[in-house]
Length: 263
Image (tube, rainbow, N blue to C red):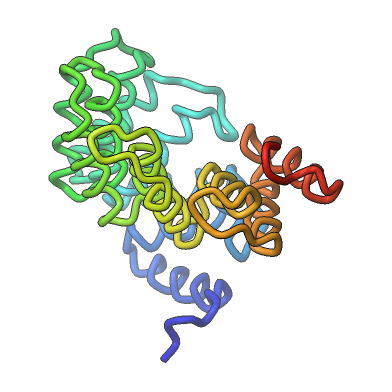
C-alpha cells in the first residue's frame, strides 16, 4: 500500500501539466495551488495567479475562489475586497463551496461590504451544504460567540464536530477548546488534548501544535513527555506567527530546565 508514502510532487506536476494541456480547469487550479503553497516548486504567487487565471477561464470554480482569496489577502497583488467578492461570486456560480464560505467571511467581517451576520450565516450554510469544512467551522464560531444569533454552545459543538469529521484542523482545535472550557460539553482536559492532538498530527494546525506540545511539556491532560513536547513545539515554531513565537518561548524554557510543576 502507498498510503504512507510521502507525496511525489514531481509526478503530480507532470500529470497536472498533461491534464491542463487538455483544457481541464481543475488541473490548472492544481498547478496554481502547488505554486501558492510551494509544494514541490518554489513558492510564487505570480505563477499561482497565472494558473488560477487559466483555470478560471476554463471554468474551474475552485480556481475562481482561489483568485478571490488572493485579492482578499493581498498575496502578490494589491489587496482588493471588491475584486475578491466579484471572484467569489463567480466561484459560487460555478459551484465552489469554498467561494460560498469565503463570501460569508466577507459579510461576517465587513470586508468590502457592510457587516451583515444574516448574510454571512446564509452563505456559510450554503457552503456547508456543499461540503466546505471551513463553512462548518465558521457556523460553529458564530454560535459560540453569538454573532448574529443567540449564543448556543451545544450548536457550536455540533458544527465543530461536523467540521472535524470533514477534516478541518481548525474545527478539531476549537472542539478541543470547548472541552477545555466546558462549553456545551463537560469540562474534560484529556478530551481537549485529544482534539488538539488530532488537529496537530493530521492537519498540522499551528495553534493545536503549540497547545499539544504544551500539554506534553506540563503533563496537563496527558502524561508529560519531553521529546514529544519538543517535537510539536518545534513544528509550531517553524510556522511562525503568534503561536510560533509562543512555541519558541516555551522551547527556551524547556531547554533551560524551567518547566515543571507550578511553572
